[in-house]
Image (cartoon, rainbow, N blue to C red):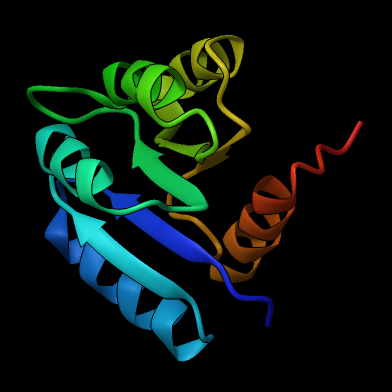
Length: 125
């Protein structure tokens, strides 16, 4: 697998931890954050190829974090994760510059495929 550095941001640790474990088993260098604020602190210290960001989080939500990343770390591709009830927020995120949005629960292989394309800047038509 190609080398990729990924930040995964989700306030639900019961979703975040197993996802990080699956990604690491597939050779992905990944770090988790449980809030947008924690993600900003990590992004200030480390460059990531891709940030996978849950849209609905307390405090700094996914769209706020997307705006911050687009402004401060424009080389970092952003993939949004949304629940069925927040698909419209995923679409709004695409308008704000997200690479893609995926529905939760996310398939790890699909996430990796999108993350690899995002890190290479390859959008499908």
